[in-house]
Image (cartoon, rainbow, N blue to C red):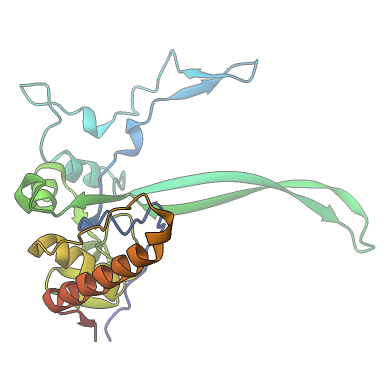
Length: 231
């Protein structure tokens, strides 16, 4: 039986049609001990712990002879059981306690915990690292693909994390529009803008021209994208 893959939470913010850069959503290693150890003062402020726990060592502080983080630190981090590809968030809430007569007798503190992958998007565009960004991140920084950790791949449009439902000539996307826009960017299909004339009476003509140009652009983009549903 094939195990069903999990889905990431899928936060999609700042998704703009005019920012059609293809990005691969990857999981970034972050040692949980890399966060600065803080303590709370009697006044309620948080300050760096003047006496940090010596056993709480950050794996990312493992440096080479040049002072850079040592390549492969993420493997040692996993071996130590630090789980660097996920971040755990813990918070507490108060719940009322009632007796059998529905009379509140007190409150209790309830602990909540959630663990999520450290999602980071990496540009896969010829204008950024010659399109080799994801490969560089895998080899030099320990990034992993979502599928490597048992998750479904998501849309490759910039800032979009919706589930991928179509495949195309340039990758997987959540729909035809994102596939066509990224394909247009990759193959050099340009959406030429019709400028304003400055004369209000001509605005309807200009708007009609813009719609016509937009339809023409999307038709050319669809031709190069070759988008089709993922089976």
